[in-house]
Image 1 (cartoon, rainbow, N blue to C red):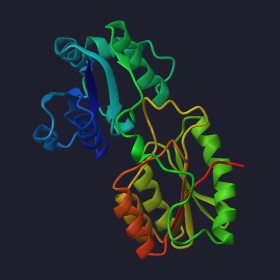
Image 2 (image 1 turned 120 degrees about the vertical axis):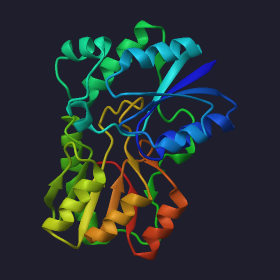
Image 3 (image 1 turned 60 degrees about the vertical axis):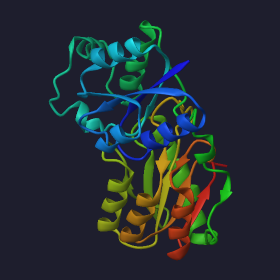
Length: 268
């Protein structure tokens, strides 16, 4: 069986390519001109570059390559969808028929178009199970009383905004929301929180209550911790079993070096 990958930005697509290679699976990659790192050409065997609106070209490539199952990996910023990129006929028709243009609807629409051509969109972590966060405290330092209070409060709020498909991340200080993610992404919302209330910040990033692991899976990594350091954040809470941790060992070493606590827990 041949697999397909729709590659967005960041490290996620590269880790999928590496995981597929370890599994001995053939992989055809659709790279997004506006998002994907150009160096993916150097590690993937079969790559086509498409514009963000070229859904028809993407599906034609997968069919030509004999792809039966495809994955999406890496963020495609929401603002790109509304940036004036010219959609092809198939993308335009799909967008026209969407009841709304939030993440679930947009990517669900693409999944439905793939299915029309016999291509199943599958779990984006298919080749990456070892990168999912295990439950519990992951760093040397455990959360203190203030951070535990922020986590409990933050999980309640973050789960609600995730349920509404508004974002995955909030930043809390003294049981008050400092910043809530919308389209800007995790690192941007942490930076904004640091500008508003630097220091003693807790970052809570969650999967949706009914998280579809085919797309929009929460991701953290070394850049997350670097952004937290710059913003004065001391604690990160993620959802166990549903959050990908990239370069996990390096991420935890950096957190330990700066006495940042990282914990994977769900709402109680």
